[in-house]
Image 1 (tube, rainbow, N blue to C red):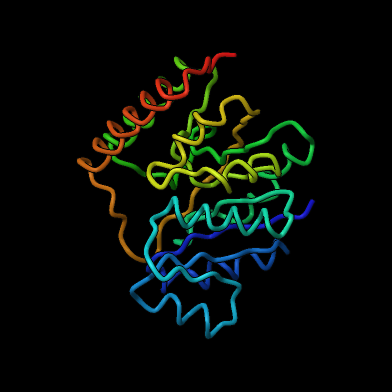
Image 2 (cartoon, one colour; image 1 turned 60 degrees about the horizontal axis):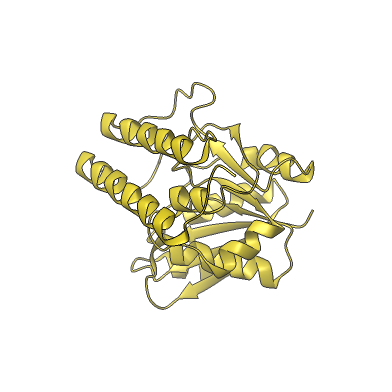
Length: 232
């Protein structure tokens, strides 16, 4: 199946080339979405003749990812994979991510850090609690289980590509889209994340709490505005 890796990039000059090179061994197509980087990311993309789309203005992670899904739709890809530009997502797991879609067992596959113990995954107490609360809320709403609600390492089939290319939230995209397409078949496969080698994570305990509270509000707004039975 024709597969594309979507790599959002914002100020990842130190890691983006290594991330793209890791995909060469997997022999998979990719597109880097440069989300108005203010460092030398664009220069790295240009000098190394990488496949990229440059956004003049910073749209945020949701806008960058949706640009990638529009590209995948327009180029008639069967599968689109989200993969961060900071090098934490391991390209060696791509085969496992797309397998359930190839076997027609899933529409969306999430690379989960919580299905198997991952010695490399380190997070704050507040972030772990936040993910647990989101997973519990998701199960309460839909009757289904997703352990890693915030994982950005995901593979989507053609039907989901079509949905995401038309409607993709600019904020809190992973948990919100997990809910919005809960009528689809969503499965998780175990992955391990690599340690971030360059730059510094912007996630703080306060940001984790703020993130969680806002996602809960988004869930409430989605449920009220759409009036759907998510357990159907």
